[in-house]
Image 1: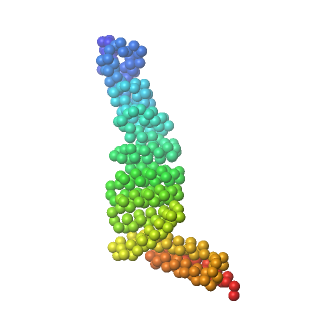
Image 2: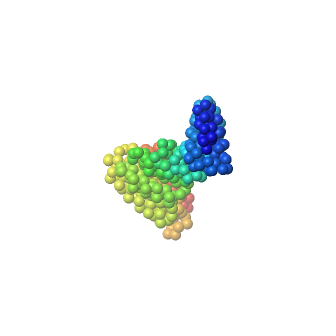
Image 3: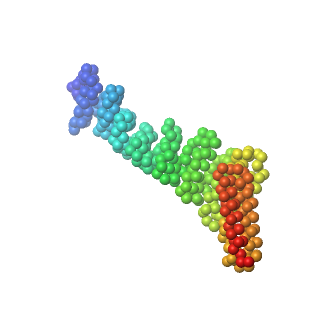
Length: 361
């Protein structure tokens, strides 16, 4: 024991860090090292830990990042109970990443995460996501970034990870995952405007994924978090827009919600401000116009019972109803819904003229 201790400490005094590391490692690998006593075992493990970190830093600073990373990861794998093992593992994996060896860095991160380490776990999750990203394994990157953002909201890169998850989920057309990440971002937002924006993104991603029931629920979550009247009305519009697409019962409920919202918008027009009012009201009236147009299109004056004159009057009533709603949307001057409403008006007028022109003289 004394001899081994003497050899190691002599090497520490006069040798290089890699020599110290090699010598101490060799003694720890002996099958009968336990016979040398627990104190020496503990001392040698401490030497290996400190020497590994020093040698890794030396190699890294000399521009040998891959060698440094490989050394540290090797030590962390070979000696499961040395001090600072999570730190050694983490530093080694990040050095491999710095060297551009993303595949080996990801393998190291996976090995680390398979352990029960608590320290540096979030760092290694970020590295795993980064390695997946740089290897164009975008689905893996999305899932890892999302897991990091959810599990470690206080991590310095949590929100950055969630934004990356949204970006790559969209690229992979995984709008469900993009919505999930946006919703998590909303819970971590530092102010109401950001929170409302993230929830809006989540609703829109679920709509793109045709998950209308889930989109309506997300919009309801947004409604509960809303503070301003404009955000509340916008959330109500999102709920109705998606409930309309869920089922026949949802359609009826949505139409009632849209009609109620239209009345509330009229009463709050001055207090909302022109921009907010125009945006929300234009879509509300456009959607009401769409329902009126559906009834107008479905009513065939030549196939319905009751005679052509009576059917034409009913068809005209449906037309007047859609004109009222679409015209209100047009008057608001919204770039998206006012233009769409004007097109629908012209299209429906042509169809009515065609029906009238087809009546036998």
